[in-house]
Length: 311
Image (cartoon, rainbow, N blue to C red; front, side, top):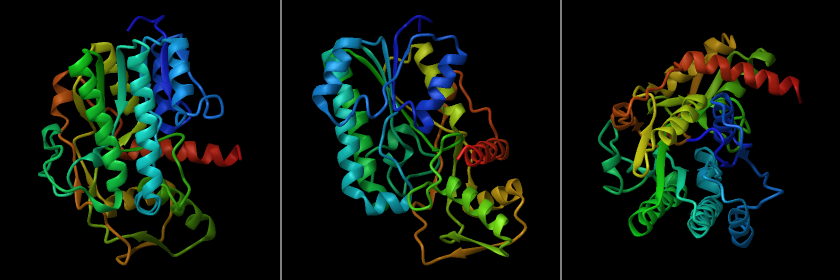
């Protein structure tokens, strides 16, 4: 990518979008185009198409999405499938209409079947049933991937898809009603510490295994692929290692400094038993994650404390 190229980051205020902006700025890219939701509602097709026609960015990072944890995905199923399908279709279709040939779509590892062989290869997509709790979101993301793939085949565009594992880091969502497991546990541990609680209740059995990727590593992978001219295709992005939810909780308690015990609430859902990505395709291009889990949690906790201090 030319350092003067116009680069549109959709969803620049979110955890992933803001990390991509940070990475681009650190890399010397000076012409970064952003719009807040108030300035441009990505659910409004006419406005999105008009914006892209007018601005005609050289590159697009499509990081905008309706996201949440198990509870939010299970309750707001219609919102998750409708809003994600609509935003994706508007931006990807609008990019093609405006003659924008280079775009990166951010998918999710939840697009893979619930009972995939481990680690999960890109080729396992659509080989089995999805996890029921986040099926609407997963279907929307699969549609986005297939949309990129179809535009590439029919119109020879260069729309690439990345499927990150579970992300965490600065600007994460800590709302206990709809956040993902890591930020939810971080907040719960912090508040339990302040209250002087003797135990911390964690959803599920603690046995499921999850892979976690620090969001700045994710942003680095995205920019790396664009700079390398990935062109098309779909890439898993992760660390290649996983931990149990129990191990995650223990690491968070260590970082936060909470000395109480962990109690698991087995009445709550576990979700997919294991979800570890095979990252060999991206590694073959020369990229690997750099931030280890405990280091990333320390950085995230510092960011969380700063956000509390700032109100």
